[in-house]
Image 1 (cartoon, rainbow, N blue to C red):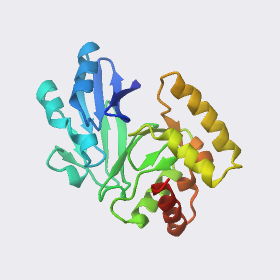
Image 2 (image 1 turned 45 degrees about the vertical axis):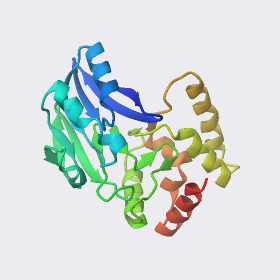
Image 3 (image 1 turned 90 degrees about the vertical axis):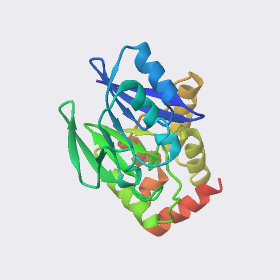
Image 4 (image 1 turned 180 degrees about the horizontal axis):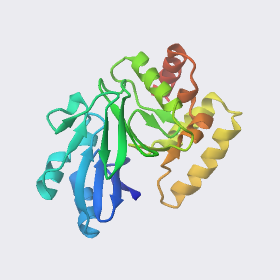
Length: 233
């Protein structure tokens, strides 16, 4: 089983899990690049996972389904018009014999969810390499609870976030903690990866413990203070 990053828009990644000529697609905000990849590699579509309602994550769903046929679509209540299987916090289901667990990681949207499939975390816009999503709902408590969930995962869990925001997030962390050696090392590493034309993702939970100030926050108040600064960065 491999996980492929299909670039979309300016900085989105549509993560596509591939095994034996079959695919599970996460947050297909745009249909064209998904169809191009699946067609070019003669891959059939088995399922779609949706983390939240924003159009850059769900805008291509209907077109993908029209082209590749009806498949199970798993997503939270806020995408119930698209999802064939509405999922909630604590739900589990199976794909390809692998357990997939669902956790509510709200704040960015009201019912944003993250999917943990084996050691692969598909977290949409809730967690980024070195950062987190804007709290559009204003519910910083929910967003902090999401960080606590992420912090409770094993270090080895791989973080497949929805956007290539890594360098900006790390530069922000440097502005807050200029003497943080782990962040400085990550900046150099990510710069080289991006220069080579590769995604900086996936990260790991272990790496996030070292460089992600939002994951390190001890309280809602500290989390909100960091998010307020990041919003204006």
